[in-house]
Image (cartoon, rainbow, N blue to C red; front, side, top):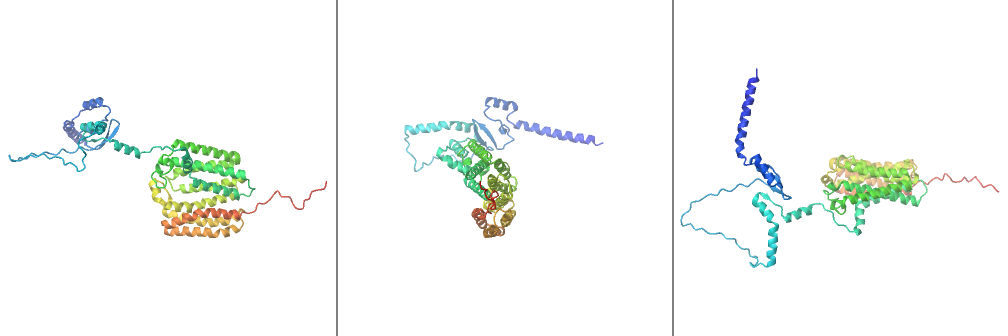
Length: 455
């Protein structure tokens, strides 16, 4: 019933569209055959919409390995002819000469330089004559563009130790080695200097590996942050292959030392630490705020590795030392990241201080107070005496007080004070725990009643 009107309507629409298309055909100066001939004659030029008059928009053409920006053509000014009287005088406008104009007599060397510069720009002039709306790239602009690009710098052999130190984040690695040494010293076993040195060295090499791979993955993002824009890989002091080779050498030697010279459990924890830092923590920094908790687990493993290097077993005392480091990292890192929120935002990192500022302050306060409870738990697990929770209470309360001020105010000053307090709080807490370490029980000591039988 409604078929005939619909067909008629569609036919009318199709006829009108066809008529409009036929009217627009003469407006295009170049047909398909002309465009193909142009392409065969000069294949270096990319054919774009420049050959269609009715599509005037900005585009980029490639000519002689150079990029040129082509804008919409300027309109030709209309020249108006004015009828003037017969006695009108025509005068020629001459260019005013500058005050500091050089002499007209040019030496032969100067003429040669001018001729060479003209020869270098002859291609650009020819291009401008052929395509007046295409702006060719000059030599100065090309040099400036290349200077802004990444390029590897030449590094002397004497500069490599400093480059390696910055690549491995030597201060963070020193903190990792210190906590490993504290874990070894807190273990209830006799002190072995050789195992102590080997375990500290292997843990330090593992930390160098994790930090180097972390910088390798974060080069594009570190270049946007003021705090990390001068790292070796960002400024091109060493190549990425050099950095990965350094990380592989440190990782293989570190894990081999911990596994073969100490014990397999410590070697497994070192490999787990590298995996968590490079494969979990580093990509999570751009995905979720859960990266802070993963990073806290990574920081809690070194004292556990020190304990297992001494005892060869995973005991409650090792987990307690790891809990100390786990809780301490939240007031330390949250206060640090609070004053670096702009940097982390430019780098695209999802930190609590950027996306969840209230949670950032709340978590810092929660874990600062939690250190008081962990200190009380140490004598319960026979790690320290009951003197430790008493003498560590003032520094724990002071850290909690600064965390409370940071929670209430949330300004840069309170965050800075909490961060600097955390720097001396951890070494002081570990030192107090070492001084209050519970005496080791001599299980193999002979009983006083036993006496040697006479021969």
